[in-house]
Image (cartoon, rainbow, N blue to C red; front, top):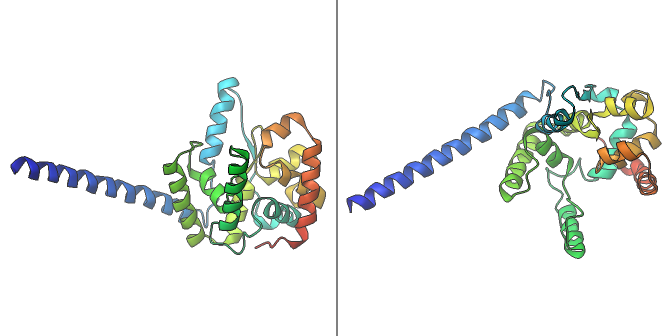
Amino acid sequence: MKLGKRIGRIVGFALGAAVLAFVVVQAWFLLHIAYWTQVDPGRTSFMERRLDEMRARDPKARLDQRWVEYKRISTHLKRAVIAAEDAKFVDHEGFDWDGIQRALERNQKRGKVVAGGSTISQQLAKNLFLSGERSVIRKAQEALITIMLEAVMEKRRILEIYLNVAEWGEGIFGAEAAARHYYGTSAARLSADQAARLAAMLPRPRYYDHTGSTRYLEQYADRIQARMPSAQVP
């Protein structure tokens, strides 16, 4: 009996410690999100990871990222990114269940992962905080952070941060750096076709940075541009 009670206390202590650690970690995420409602984030977890990879090849490698306010980003780009990445962005609460179902069906049909169904909020949660690991635990944490983002931030702020930290090439992050890298202009002056092409690059930005335009990229950009007028922007 004494041994059983001792084991029970140990198990109870371990469970209590695990719950406390979980709460502390979630509070850490939530405090950062609340802080970023007013203060622009610096480097994200994803950006740090990319920089480490680049510096493994070139110790002098640097990231190119220049923060710009929401009002200084072309409405064309906002519409293009929403049309391409998350058509229901202004309406959902972090998750596009229809999009997730479609992605699951496509992946099942192809026998491999070819679509993710992640919303802009989910992508931002992953980029800000998480590793590139594919696991149930990481996806669960991504979901919790997504809920926090949607609860604490306005849609406009979520999109503003996303457009400033999204990867657009080898060491190229954010709309301003992307606009200058590819078109020699500012994020504010991007045209509709330039914005559509940048949005089309998002699934494989480093690939297109190295290879340049492809027939698929141009066709995808055309489809995005056709959907842009109906995209709702916060």
